[in-house]
Length: 336
Image (cartoon, one colour):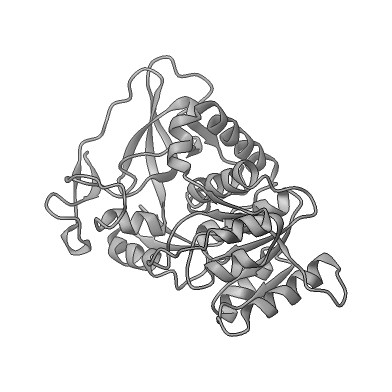
């Protein structure tokens, strides 16, 4: 029987997508056919699906890049995997909103029994982006203080967890009390709102508390920023000497600017984080990060975040939910 996929053949607008039949692909040498059980849906996925992402894709187009599922068939020369095993793809697929896809066997990670498939599908993109940002670009060290914007979102919540794994203290910035409670439950040492008036003072008080600087104004070592909104400048000004402001994305929409004298005066750095080019240009280092994430998943160091699931037929709602950023955690499309 054929499978299904969600595809547009004309324009990339949500109303143009339809559920259509999909030919079941045959795995080649070293490949596995995966019956997809769940596909993570992030803000970038929603932008890409509607033609608003900076890296344009042509039609026909099937959204979705991060999947978990069941091994359905093995190609020649595949060892160490069996039909029926539950796995997570550690690399990008091109047709995640589908029943089936092909993945190189070497890029599949077996799931622990305690991890659900929907939870597994929420991990890869956010965790590897946060890991690359904090470990490689931010050089986060034990005892440092990290401010995470969008701390209740997919990549933000992954950053909250990974910063703690690396030994840092986390201050979570989130716009609502519900989101701040969510970030606190992930282990954030303190939370701040995002109302601009008086924000730097509230942030300094939080940084002083988490660093133990009684009666002082605490400073930040690292800012993890997937939002780059109105607080971009105030956050950079709150960095201490040799601080690092990590630019992950522009969820706020409008791209902000920074006066060039500020990095000079603080000895601080504005650091770009491009996970796509990291994977292309530094393949060995990217594979090392995937191996580290595999280890963390296997031994429970990285717990999967809570997810909000949508049935396959509700794919439009899933894309809109991911684009809105209004709900905590990661949006996941489930196939069955």
